[in-house]
Image 1 (cartoon, rainbow, N blue to C red):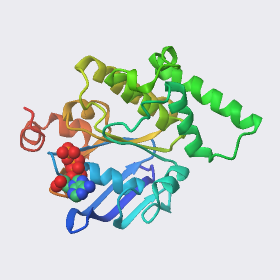
Image 2: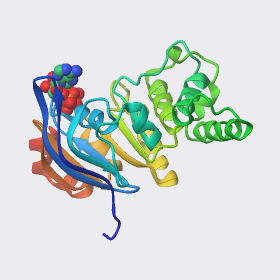
Image 3: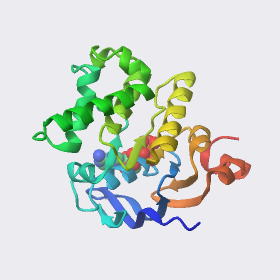
Image 4: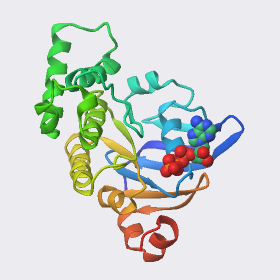
Length: 248
Ligand code: ATP
């Protein structure tokens, strides 16, 4: 289409010490798209998200709307508009639900901006996030550690949305969740994408689920992309599903 690339990944290499994990990834994501990254355990899906948000050092180039992301810290990429929801969520168990959400706002603005306009903006963001996740509104004053797994994942995503990100990186949002909760969560991710226009890159073991909301998908194997295409096409290709995704 005519839509320019929003996220452009070129020749991305990344790893941990001697362990080379990503062996030169090339892919593009258009603004407003949901992109799924699929593939077997250890393929490098998590490492890809970590490289995009500055948690691991990468070589090559990753640009968001023309701005280079490689070489920046997670704090810096967050200010640029990248919100990362790691596997295992990373919410603060001892803080309340609302306090966790307010941490997300701080990451966006920095701790010093506390004027009236900023307070009003944060209140509006909380309201918006509570509309997506009504359970978080009900549990505002509850400690995050006392939430169910699904609610904690909702909180982690809600906190990321407090950043008003232009790029949302989700690592295995379905991990450990019951099927019904997972479906609810993915519907909310779809709604956020459609209503806010947030570009989403989602890593998932559950390929069917991710392909259900994604526009495009990339299959990663041993640090290389082995397949890329429209999600609908990948979903319908039975052989692809069997060989690469472990479903049939
Ligand atoms: P999974 O679905 O199992 O999480 P993945 O596709 O997300 O797999 P990664 O987590 O990116 O894969 O891991 C890719 C490789 O990097 C694996 O071989 C893993 O053991 C290795 N690895 C991941 N994190 C580290 C680390 N902190 N230090 C060293 N090696 C790591």
